[in-house]
Length: 198
View 1 (cartoon, one colour):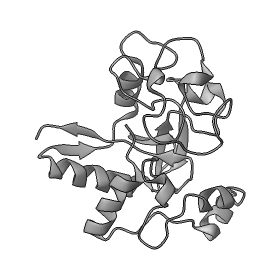
View 2 (cartoon, rainbow, N blue to C red):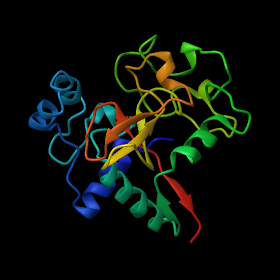
View 3 (tube, rainbow, N blue to C red):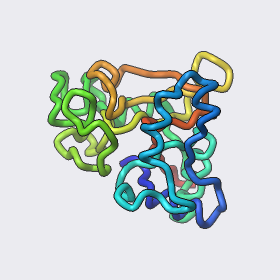
View 4 (spheres, rainbow, N blue to C red):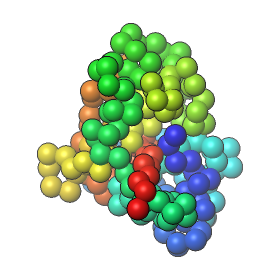
């Protein structure tokens, strides 16, 4: 599942990584000022995540901090942690049969948190078990976009996958991708880790 704010808080406290924040000036520079209010709902109180969102996916984290978290979490379990590549992400989401969504080819708003029927913000990870992929992986469609290790078509960019709570159905398709600056912090972007044996 995606990394939660509670899991990320343990990393922040141990490594002294900056907490997820709402960079108003940066949002303005990127032309995203309208997202500042949305992001403020997810803002941390000092070094603590919002109490009502500890089981929600962490957001407002740039790709480089997501990578550091995955490495840190992997070390705690004797594994090599990292972000998935876009191809790994797609395989985990759809299996080998080329389906359109993790559960099959037909869009079903009951199986994900998106703009069609969701609450308009993040939900706890795993809240849509009927949206599981063939491998039992949850939240591969909707809730938050997810950083991948795959570079985008512009320098300093990354591919994000999965759609978000504000996405239209086509953005949550397994074959859909969005390219964002890897330094971007966004209220609709989180991440998950994969672990390799050393």
